Image 1 (spheres, one colour):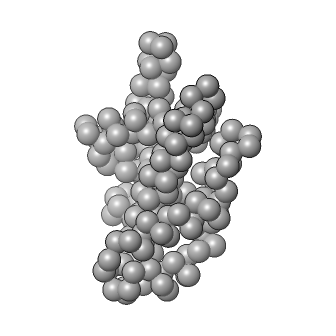
Image 2: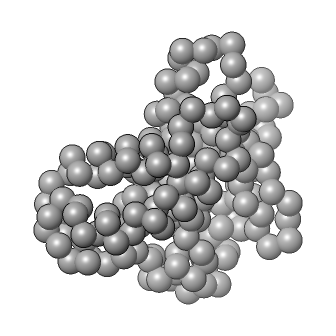
Length: 175
């Protein structure tokens, strides 16, 4: 996967996987969501191809960058929709459960804003959430991607998820 070309072979090789990840990201969106998995992948491709001369180190490097870009596409889309239709509620997303807990349904923009705050104080746990939620990576894939143990990935995800849920509940009660 080490290619100085903008995307070419890397994108083609992982297109189906990216589409599956995009579908998973959009599965928990509100009914009638206008962004489809193929459109999300293609928008991510356009944004990735605008960056010149990336030396893709491996599959996980590509997926890590793609997860970040898909997150940005989803957030931009949600902001546009909020601007166009201020009366409609923001789209919701579901934070996958952390070992035995139930999943949490949250406002997509609120999750992004809370994740940005988490990145400021706890970068590694925030990266794990981004890779798991927006990148669709498993714990083992996150461990390999970030060069951490699976146990560390589990601790980071458990901590980050609890932190995000607490922050999001605090925002809801403050509103």
